[in-house]
Length: 255
Ligand code: GLN
Image 1 (cartoon, rainbow, N blue to C red):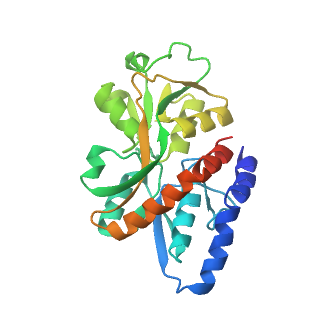
Image 2: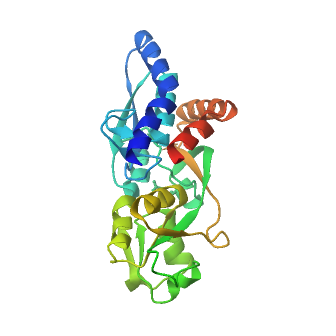
């Protein structure tokens, strides 16, 4: 899969990169800083030859497009997901593009762009764990992994009320799925695209439960009141949605 993602990145972001080269000629190159947690394929991950340095993925392509539209150079700051909202708030990063669900709770701290992707949660488990077939089943004495501060953490903790002693919280999506693979955990609850991609890669099983795992909308977070950047982001997103470019990029990375 890694190989494919690399190839897809080159294709998917080709147009974006050309624009980048053109705009670099006309500009002072002030950086636009994108905060993310690059352990969330296909939205953000590291690779040897990414769109920006070692960073690649759907969100990095979108970020590059936004930076290009402003004649600015994109810089990626990789950090723990749980620190992203604070980093936007303090101005350490200009925007968080991180498969971040626009939740009411986060809206109290940051402003969100228009949404650009609809996702949901999924359960990842071992194929021999045949008694996990719904979100409810996670309450039956199962050890459950989530990523700290993800929406999945909130669902497992507050909605499903899985017993606290059964929950393990990690900082990176790719690490916690490894714990399912090596039998340390019965299941992980994580965003669908990432979960399915990792499950397929690791030979694990995924379980959907749309009644419990409702649709989530990904959006880009900026500092409260930064309407100039927000409007710029929204106009790029609008253009990318209308032209079908977001879908095209997502399809290529999702395959
Ligand atoms: N969509 C989830 C959230 O916003 C997870 C995002 C991520 O891992 N990058 O909490």
